[in-house]
Image 1 (cartoon, rainbow, N blue to C red):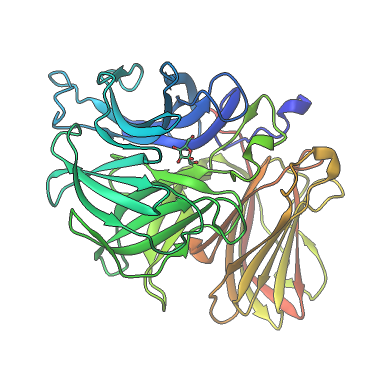
Image 2: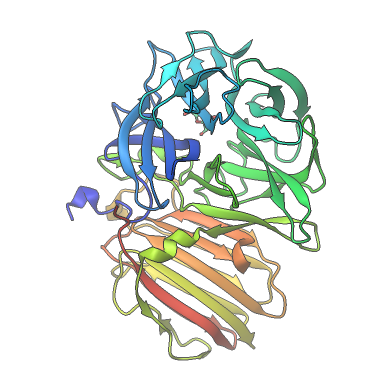
Length: 476
Ligand code: FRU
């Protein structure tokens, strides 16, 4: 591996070159998944914002198709969404060809408004609906439209952020072209920073009842510092979202932001986020690209004493990248005796571990390269908290403020802990308790390849189930 490429992920999308931030316009159509993304085609920092475009047949291997929506004479193409207009409500389709319609924020200094573009050839070429926005309030900050078809009222619904006011406005439209204001949500939950990238979608709960999730990102705001994402669960009648739970953080690590789910994906709700944090995004030590997205995650709702909580789990497609399995033979983790879980250093791996604390107070996992321990995850078996500590070797050139300690509350019962951890060349995603508690963190190893070590503290722990798979590069 060329030194510059050594942090290039094996199973997370990166553009061949240059800058990436938010995922945009995620869409499933004709057997293809589309990933558009905030992209600077000319450099490795935020600027000349355009939509880059990649397609995949399995959510893992992405083909980079280059720029789909380029910056227009100084009007940047900020975040937004895309849908299949099956019934040609926009009138922009051809007989037998439903158009793909993208709604995005056009940004000029001092002005943001929502614009429409469409494609009649599977997203390969895009046309503007003139130079006129479809929704304009003459505002400086008004962005990130997420659109979906609301079957109850048989019309389109858009959630869009008023960042400064910490509000999400809901609009409706019969055609994707004329939008009527329906309601305002917020301020609510965390309001310590501007609100960005809202999304509203339904999910069935464990009793088969339809509930609605409203997600909105905050920068800066998260407990760990920098970019954070919060969600509310509630009801939606086609006009108004009413929360029935307080706001919760949906990822407690430092590097998950601006998540968006795929449109037109029947049977499941899948999203992915930008695996980064505005606090240091423009200074990450990678070349010739900068920026990556999280693993696609399937969403569901789980019951808890505090009402429904969001669960995120890696999509099943990831399993196809699993290579050799390394089981852990020993079934008792002795107090203070480390157990090495990886046979040798692996560039990418998928680790599952179910544990019962037989006296142990804590499980500690060390994920490191060479002599370093870049990521240390420690879990209270009594079920109080999960702590992820990130330490980067000075030679790697991580940005200032990158290292730190991040914490998530756990609610484990009976001293049981279940963990799934995905490690790629430069990231760690932790799914605890079946995905109810998630932490995402970038991590840049000093040496190529990760080894993982586990230890129980304060007593023994029983390994109930465990597996470690080497993960292969996602390739078409
Ligand atoms: C979120 C965000 C969006 C905006 C985009 C610009 O990360 O700030 O609000 O549309 O990035 O690239």
